[in-house]
Image (cartoon, rainbow, N blue to C red):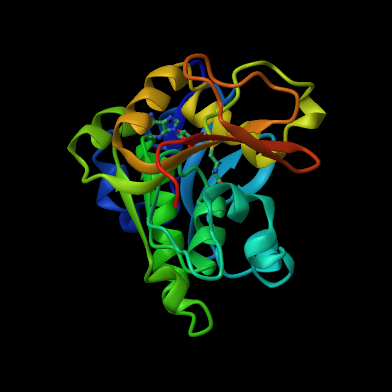
Length: 249
Ligand SMILES: C[S@@+](CC[C@H](N)C(=O)[O-])C[C@H]1O[C@@H](n2cnc3c(N)ncnc32)[C@H](O)[C@@H]1O
């Protein structure tokens, strides 16, 4: 990865151990700021700072995620249908590519227990911070109680996990899109975590562990992940969910 990552100097003493232990340099020790990403505090939230955007943090309380919780279409929305939710069914889900945790939060807000796996230690620390803050909000505390985060590579973590009803994957799509087409936060995540070039291995690991189905989110028009044939798909304006059935609900 060409991007350098450093710790934002103010508030350094409060930076979580999980980030301190990565041995990142301090902002003040970096000479060039070309492609530099900083991790530090912004208004009591652990955040990423880049030259491409304002501070980015995990937010389950306000913004897009809150809007989607209220107006996203409940169990009729494409993500919920893809995962197999119905009035009677709330499967346990492993979200093996947690990212900002937005899809996980939607599933948890609809009643699923969600175990998030994220391999970037920085992203996992941002998620943990987002969960800790949200757990203090009365309105969503019960949703947050259904969510947990593991910092690991899901390909190995899934081998050690108990079998679970549904595994959800949303790996970074490797083909370059026009800069404007990729949202700012996703661009910063790509800068932080790099492209996910091992999606074939991840899909296989998920197919070996899920009991009922594996669901893969792809951009509309993108090819499915190579390998096993997709059984069915659910489309929304910009997104397609590829469904691999293992056992009927
Ligand atoms: C496109 S983002 C996911 C966005 C997420 N669905 C959301 O709603 O915010 C992909 C994330 O998956 C993570 N990831 C990709 N492959 C992984 C793997 N094998 N194990 C764990 N995390 C992985 C990346 O580090 C990145 O943070």
